[in-house]
Amino acid sequence: MNQAIAWVEANPLLMTVIMWPLLTALFTALFKPRTPEQYAAIASKDPAWFYERWVEVLRLVGAIGIDPVKALQIVKNILNPSAPR
Image 1 (cartoon, rainbow, N blue to C red):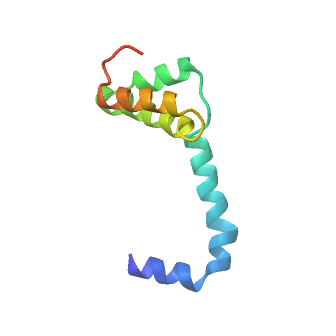
Image 2: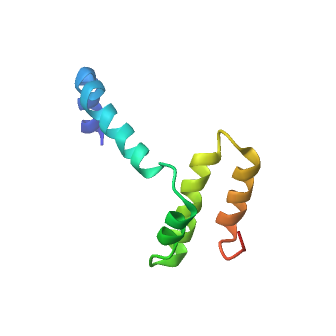
């Protein structure tokens, strides 16, 4: 890990030009807006205990800065995934 950090510190331009766009593309793909049907399809995958919570995390990241009421409901869903939505 220390070697990776040293490399990043030694190559800031490369990190800015290559890694930053790759990281932002990854986050954009993960947290893009989805329809309720798409969320249901993800949540139906196995293992259900993981994917039910993963869907709620995706929804939380999408709502946390915009809709605090919705974000609190999603946190409740993460803690109790079998509750009706």
